[in-house]
Image (cartoon, rainbow, N blue to C red; front, side, top):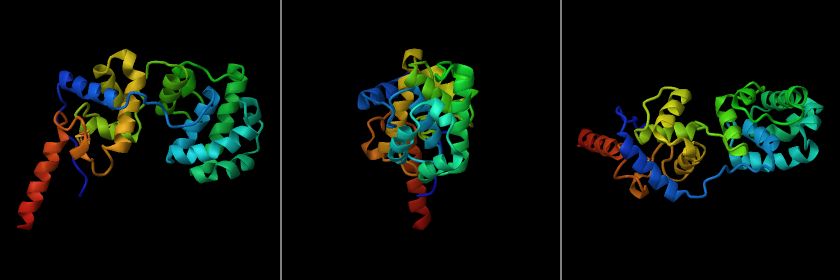
Length: 231
Ligand code: SF4
């Protein structure tokens, strides 16, 4: 099936909240799939996960964290040694540079501790808004919604946003989701995106919110049009 267009209108807030409540029930223990033991390990794992998979990162980080268990050790690492370990995560030259430079900054400006404020996280090398939001919300239980590719796609299909950028989507979700649930909401959408609302074709037939979601009627219309054009 060709790419399914996103709904052109947002759903009403009450309907959005109903859908989110169902997803909350469907994914009650939603947490990050990345393995980590402290904010430093989470930060490094999230940087490595860009353009990679959590499973791949989880296979990579045990060796990395064994050799470089602290920001001090990683800051002193040789780039080529780090590159060798993280090579399978992709973009390994850039990622090696970023995690070593981030470790430097953590040591020099934050006393060797990953900062717990979003602005300070975003100022670290290799850390964009999404990575900062993940670390802020997961490691520090801060109120933030991290918008990755799954959150972006699922939020559009559910009619929660018409946003063109991840930041637009984040802003729209913040208006719908109660603040105390921000740090959980992106996990519901990520897990739903991985399990059911997949790219490129969602599995609407088994989706618990298919009666409320605006995308199944769009798919039904596309299917009918295609059948007619073939007839
Ligand atoms: S009904 Fe379909 S498009 Fe909507 S959230 Fe479920 S799987 Fe995704």
